[in-house]
Length: 204
Length: 350
Image (cartoon, rainbow over the protein chains, first blue to last red):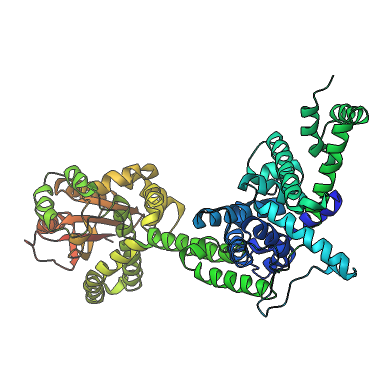
């Protein structure tokens, strides 16, 4: 896992170097590689697909304009995560609430043509399993969206993006110990939320 | 007994493998002995599993294209000054290098071909001149359009020596017909009198940088075609190592503009004793406020070049007649505005 991250970072650094030498198109490889994870960060933070798409565009353009400020001591992905996270938080402040729109648990995530976005990994499952798992996912999503912004951020970066505590600390500009305690509280909050939502099911 | 609350705070980090070795051992030991904490750990594991099972949403297919389009637009917008500042070195460096070379060449051109800086050296030279010349030169000073550096005097004299060379060869070829030679020589003198200003100006421009070198070697520039002995005789008169030449020159040092009007005059004097006549003439030069340029003594003849205020030319002619029979161009007396350059050829009477 770590080797894979290092290999990917090397590719990122090559692309960054090309961009700095004037090859704009090299940035396309960065966009292609990171648009999905970064969109998910923005979406989980904002709880709005449209807002997440806007923030994603803004973040990539800001990253391109600020490429010279990037220092290779940090992973490029960490630097990009920080930009997306900052943009998403700014958007939240602009909207004056924790989220853009209230996500209905039963509202599917739809494309422009009305079809539903489904991850490739979620195919090859029985209809019942999909129904159950989708139900749980919606509840989990709602519980995360209900968390305070700081707790939401650590849970997204750790459990959805797989960043280490140190990387999260660097992304959010907080001590590693704070990451640990916030993550514990965030998970406890999600657990409590799920217990409430599951109610009669008696299980998470 | 370990605090259960403290252990539960660590359960989250235990799942992520972010505890230290000691912490991990401690928590695991506690979980083996505490059922409540063990259940809490299982619930935490399940919660984390549920969160991590969330599906990733897909970006719209147009996202990459739109981002890249906006970045291309941004890139075009950043051109201009800031675009230039952030443009890559492999484009910027050759252009900047060319600019630096062009600037260096421009400075070199200006330094090399600009007129020498005006200095007060002329005034200093005028004050060094003999008292007989001072009023004339002082009167002329305010009119001087372009004062000339000391080295330029050498150049002027050198320029004249070339002319003299021509004159000498011209006259020596026709030595037997001295009288007939007078008119072409006169013509030449008049011609050079007109031509000289331009020549001086050109010499001043092109060899201003050689001023110091010329000051150190006036003898070479005055040297006429002949033997080494002739050169050494010139040394004696004009001055060793150029120092004497400089002082002799300073006696009659004049601004370039006044030389415009100076004349070349060739005079032949038939005398009995070349050496004594030569000494007498040098005495006259000194008395009349002139300057000896060169002297070339031989057994049967001698050649003396000198400069003299035009006003003293008549006096010179009168005294020359006392020494011997004078032949040559008789310059009208009384024109005090001119500096004249004379070549007196002494010919031994037979």
